[in-house]
Length: 273
Picture 1 (cartoon, rainbow, N blue to C red):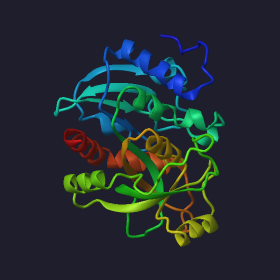
Picture 2: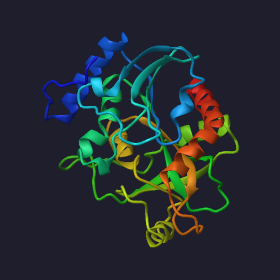
Picture 3: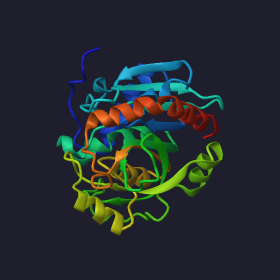
Picture 4: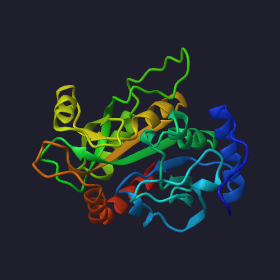
């Protein structure tokens, strides 16, 4: 199929409903229970989810775009879980630094909600501030700091963010893998990596993980009333933590090395969510 080229609805919620209808038609499903967004380093996490119900290129769906970041896939894949549920896996995402606007960044979350999803898992690759957490280590997000200066909310939309990252799901993840620790994710706008001074600032205000995605999607998920779990793969030490320069190839390699562990973790989580 060719990339979607139809009219783009200016209402982002209506556009999400339109995309959801396309998904139903393309994948032959009426609804879904669970959705995962796979960030940098997590591409191989679908390896142990079983045989897909169906798959479609994201660029073929209204409001979506092909991922521009190396290490991301470009598909929406539906799987049947061991618990008899339907899981959607977005193998790529739109980042704020691409310049498409906040609505494009959170469009996948809103589309998942329009398909009836109740539980969302957001993953990413990130820099780590704690030298004790080696590259290749997954960390559960327990809270976040949004330093982008942006929000997907419009007008006087006041939502409680105190339990954005669902405590019950943090407990579920730790029961699946007791070695998982938790952290506070800090989103910078990007696309440049953070300076050592910015990393120190993030640490002073409570951050332990830094990256360029996820928090805007988390706000949209909270607005939609979704239960939310976040998993960050520490792909490198953040700037200034070591003397090593930052390189996106390092991110890709860390994800490839951690692939088997991540695939097992995601499969075990999907089986119980």
